[in-house]
Length: 250
Image (cartoon, rainbow, N blue to C red; front, side):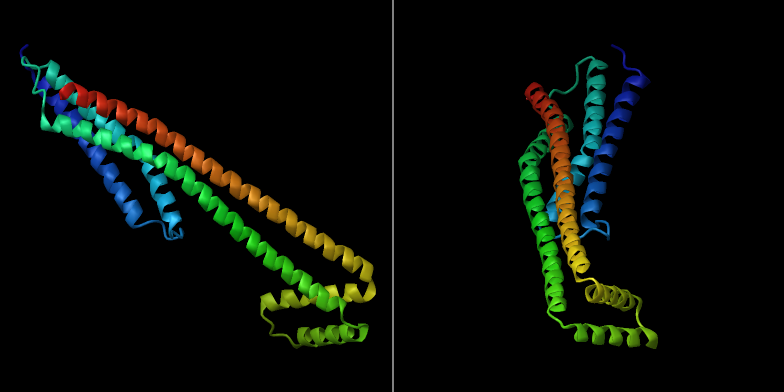
């Protein structure tokens, strides 16, 4: 078979494009891991979850690059009379890289599921602790307020009124003072309604806690399953190319 310009140019173009795709994706991954977004807090398990997620999200480009290189190599083989060098070092290196990436994506699956479950447990524990502290603070304040006499409550309302009329109160403290005054007035004028509203606020806090915990569990589950499934598919593709290729060239 007489070699033509296209028989040299086509495999060269494909292998060059493949090499660029592989290198650019690896460089992009390194930069994403070394310089993560500033709004992300990555400590301990968070960093590993972020790293594996980024690797899986960028796992398709190296696969396309390897496919380009294998296709270019095949075109070069069929377009030459001797069928090409069976043990070409670049050919072997491509299949070794594919096998290595396949192994990495296989190892990511159990790690991702385990790390996601641990992270979910930590997040739920953190949410539960924060809500419990808020709930305890509310109950403590209610206990202190309920234990006060009417005269003491009137004195507190008077002091708050004086502070409000004085002005120059930060916005956050102004809001807290107004809320405290309204609660004290309600307790003074209608204790039963005050008790009912306090109980309702605690119930709403518990509902909000359950809602946040459910959302956190669903988010972690979706992230873990999505990443694991994508990693599984990538592992199959890389291992199929790598092991089949190594079997033929070796």
